[in-house]
Amino acid sequence: MSQINPFEIVRRQVDKCSRILKLDQDVTDVLKSPMRELHLSLPVHMDNGKVKVFQAYRVQYNDAKGPTKGGIRFHPDETIDTVRALAAWMTWKCSLMDLPLGGGKGGVICNPKEMSEGELERLSRSYARAVYQFIGPERDVPAPDVYTTPQIMAWIMDEYSAMAGKSQFGVITGKPLALGGSKGRGDATAKGGMYCIREAAKLLKIDLSKATIAVQGYGNAGYYAAKLAKEMFGSKIIAVCDSQGGCYCKTGIDAEEAQKIKTKTTSVCNMKTGDKISSEEILELDVDILIPSAMENVITEKNAANIKAKIVAELANGPCTPEADDILYKKGIHVIPDFLCNAGGVTVSYFEMVQNFNMYYWTEKEVYERLDAKMTTAYHDVYNTHKDYKINMRQAAYVRAVERVVEAMKLRGWV
Image 1 (cartoon, one colour):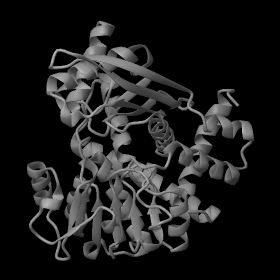
Image 2 (cartoon, helix red, strand yellow):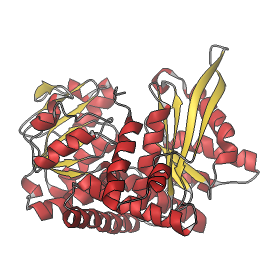
Image 3 (cartoon, rainbow, N blue to C red):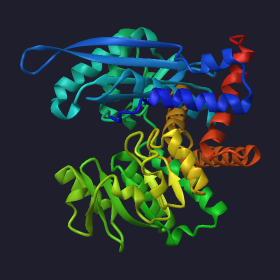
């Protein structure tokens, strides 16, 4: 994890937004504070016969607009401030997409790479039992995040259902299709980002069929971003990387081949084609579009001046610090901010909730059409606000999102 406190960045971003909207200080104070958070100790029987206690969290940041929604991370470096920040970003993300949801997030401090399937199942079920009274289809709906999977979601759903005494598929999203998952969920985050890139390219007059792209981070979002950019636009992926390093090849990289190498050897840096490149160097390549898809705070005041891309499409959460935002804006680089660019995931999770409530499921084509409409509308909302207020795209996204949350809080009599 970065040494920069992500929740302090959230609070600074809210302060900036509040000044633009001329909000009262008491309203700002509410926006800067999580409404509730759980700190949990989860005892789990390990395969060696011993019991290990895992620390875990669930933060429900703001539910003025509806039940909170947000993923659960299993990560060895998880912190409460990271979870708070991600829960806040989920609040703005759901609001920006005009979903009837608030924002939440969860995390367990563990290293799933060092755990057996049985240990992961027992940990997942322990987490479900610990948060049982605080989550539910109309209260707080978790989802997958870093190092969590549809199988883990299935275990949590099953444990919750056992405690409730009835099947509760709607308690969680990102489930396997056989248990009420939604078609189109697997690549939804990257797909939503592609719709935003498409709209930005139209405005900036960039021919995507000739565009070059670098992808930092090669998990779910990064892999699908590389794959979809080629399939949807004919763009050329010239660099990919993950935490161990990456590969640069000016003639182009095949996304599927990179994924096979990563699966087989744990890293795309083991590809035979092209030149080796670090996860820091990839950010400064001379490309049309840079897609940070890894962790937060990778673009800072130290390297922002070296960014050469015309578009920075943030599929990761919080990849740019506020100082970097200012530098990129002055350089004329078009940033598609995280809680707009990567909102495809939560949007299709919301679609999954709707399908679970109705017990009627959509085709993949219907999911993508609805996602396209949501992402396109949200992108132009943000772009027009950016022009009207003469502020950068992140500030514009905050303005659109926060004003909706504030309206809901005022109508409910909270402020």
